[in-house]
Image 1 (cartoon, rainbow, N blue to C red):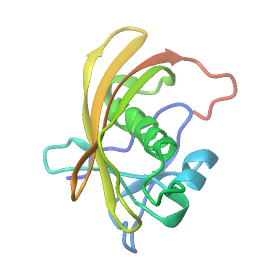
Image 2 (spheres, rainbow, N blue to C red):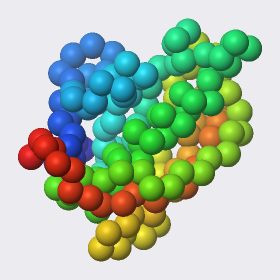
Image 3 (tube, one colour):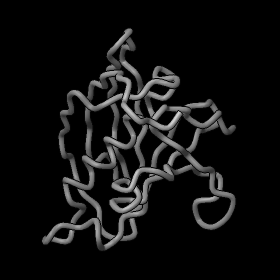
Image 4 (cartoon, rainbow, N blue to C red):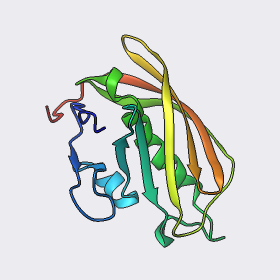
Length: 155
């Protein structure tokens, strides 16, 4: 089942129709996520969001494992996907982020993230998630998004 794409005021997602990421969606107007990832999202049979990317050499640290900064950037991408129902058409910024590194992967690994909204208030959304690979969990995180109106945001 493919849920409706998020309609966040500052984000535009495109569903891919072919290639290895067919049926997944990605931001089309987020230069950082495009360059750092690219990162992808889809909705499973139960309508729950799943985020993923394929680890490449550019994502690795000097020891050959997935760079912690890459994991944090991916988790930040995922936070907005996980929160899309609570965001509606509002924009948001990451107000708080805390993560625990549990493992790593090497190039070629599929990295996924699932999570949940813990609480959605009028102006804040509390989210937690788990980043995993074929080898098991590699990062757990929790975050708070602050809803905001961004000047010049795309509607």
